[in-house]
Image (cartoon, rainbow, N blue to C red; front, side, top):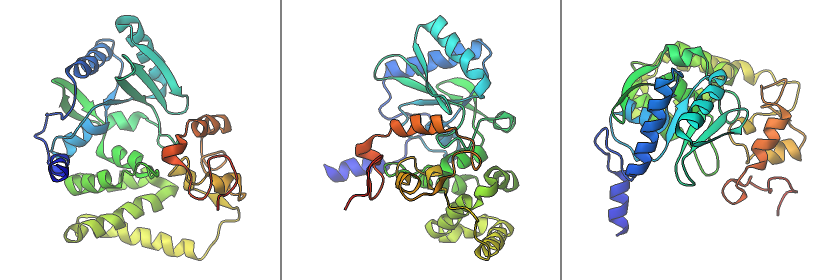
Amino acid sequence: MIAAAMAAAASPLPPGSKRGLRSATRRFHRRVLETLDAAGVPFLVGGGHALERYLGVGRSVNDLDLFMRRGDVPTALAVVARRLGYHTAVTFPHWLAKIRRDDRDHVDIIFSSGNSACPVDDDWFRYAVPATVMGRQVRICPVEETIWSKAFVMERERYDGADIAHLIHACAERIDWSRLTRRFGRHWRVLFSHLVLFGFIYPSERRRIPESLMYRCLQLLEHEMHRAPARRICRGPLLSRAQYLLDVQLRGYEDARLLPHGSMSEVDASVWTAAIDRAASRPVGADALGAPQE
């Protein structure tokens, strides 16, 4: 039974098929797409649907992730609530809202990232890719922005590195590497870490990443090795909201998410921290708000 379950989980699905998606959930998702489209609210489809489009294989997709500019979120929520009667709420003011049909089904409305480093802006829409999702013509998030936003997800219970490796494997020749590099900016080390891992995962595919980009990262690395920051900053919270709390709360490091280093407010960071599932995301060596453990 274990072997059969492992085989089922690992086997790819034909594009367009959805393992485990209930018909009621599919109808709910379609109604949201149709309503937003009819109202002229601009959105992009991301998540598993976008990965399916780029990777060319079906995935088990049980949710719907819609990306939109922050300024369009109030209109989207109001339209869905008024026309469909679904419950809507801004779950986290710095990045996420939700549309709920019941306790089981929801649609995520994403306008930034949990670390507030990857806001949805005009370029997401400028470089969006046409696709068909649940029989509807939509646009999906660009591969560059998909990699950018996923690259920072390194939680204890979730790591999106495999998605990034698969995206590079599927799209390396189509990726605008210059634009992707600009997206990461001063966080170039995060991109570099995924590029190095790609070469480890797929040794025969290493040369599909531009040599100039790899050498540029090595030059930046050499430059940084000879100069240390004047301030004690921890960028760990950009990668995990839980696992580096002991550094900023107990060890005196400045939180790179907050001004002047990042764009997240202390209030947003506090709300984001308070929602941590302690059982799944506890920081290593300490609980979320307490003293170090033995």
